[in-house]
View 1 (cartoon, rainbow, N blue to C red):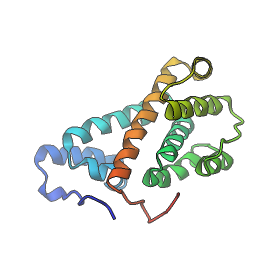
View 2 (view 1 turned 135 degrees about the vertical axis):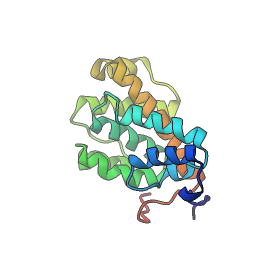
View 3 (view 1 turned 60 degrees about the vertical axis):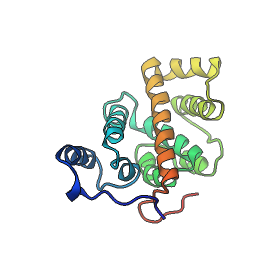
View 4 (view 1 turned 90 degrees about the horizontal axis):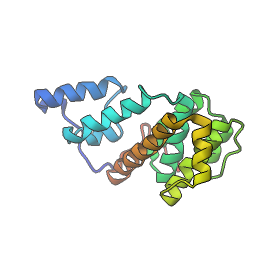
Length: 179
């Protein structure tokens, strides 16, 4: 049971309504973490901008973006985000084996070096709150500094998204129970 009321678009101020429409324009409906965040426009606006900066305007290939999201939201056990990003990850080119292993909390067998480098770096970051020198060097050598910065930012963003989902018990889109 969600711990929040849906946002009533008819009761929004003109400024809040404009933000609501901006956030809604990127999503089929106002659901998930933004159904909570929209209760605080001062938070929702900047969070939406960071999501757009990484997801839409970032340099990371969609497959790698989705890998980072899946690693992070599985670590956080954020069911809503997993239910949304599992099919997106597969569509973006992640293998079924990789996605299924992440879901089962097993280390995937990677064929692609960029996926392996990202998995190692993001997993270390989530588990140890830092990335070792060797893992960092491999990440930067494999995907470049700018993409490494985006990857770390993406992981941090989805840690926050996972916290919102979990704290406010945001239901999955279709009642899925991924974990």
